[in-house]
Structures are given as C-alpha cells and as structure tokens.
Image 1 (cartoon, rainbow, N blue to C red):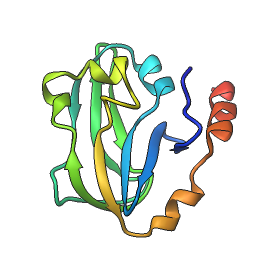
Image 2 (image 1 turned 180 degrees about the horizontal axis):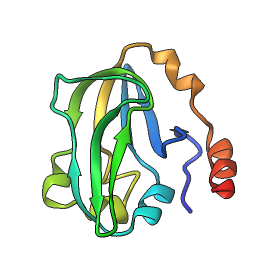
Image 3 (image 1 turned 180 degrees about the vertical axis):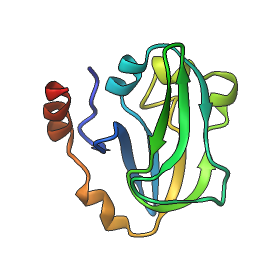
Image 4 (image 1 turned 60 degrees about the vertical axis):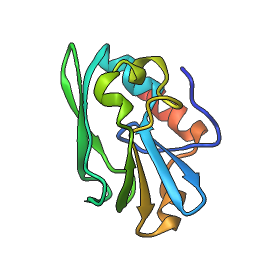
Length: 127
C-alpha cells in the first residue's frame, strides 16, 4: 500500500496535501483498493463550501457507492474535471492524477488534527 509521508490522512480514508494557502484532497490507495474498479466520481461545484466530516461527493465502483467525507472545512476552488472522463485514475494514480478537489481551508491548522502516514498505516492494519 502506497502511503506518502508528506500527506495527512482522515479516518474516512481521504488524503490532504497542503499547497501554500490551499489544500488538495483525494482518496487513499487503501480506499481505492478496497472499493475496486472506480466507474464514476461525483464532486462538488467550484464555490461550494464543504464541512469537516460531512459528505462532499461520492465514488461509484463496480461493487458499491461510497461517500467522500471532507477531512477539513473550506471553500472549493478547483475540481479535477479529468475524473469525469477517466474515473479509473482513482485506481491507477490516487495521489497524482486522481486528486479530487482543492479547497481554501476555513482554518488551515485543522490539517494538524489529521493522521500522519504512520498513524494511518496503523489504523488500516486494524481494519
């Protein structure tokens, strides 16, 4: 399982990458492997406000539909439109090609409350 050390992770299996004043969000390698082949990704609109621990979209696999939960609160400033035509990027490249949204966080320090890569790996071992 690929778990980049520079990212932070939520209990709902989203990853967070701080990029200056903005935060990029996607789902983890562990999550995509559990879901199976992704066939559709539903994302919010640019300008939408998302709230920590609340759904902001969903991913549909051949097995199930799974909600995406916001790891932190903020305003959506960019969405990955490539996922409309290529949802398989989530399986192929969960950390590079398949980022989902970029937000301007309401409170940037909220990222500090998320898990480190080491903590996330430990949590997924228990699942």
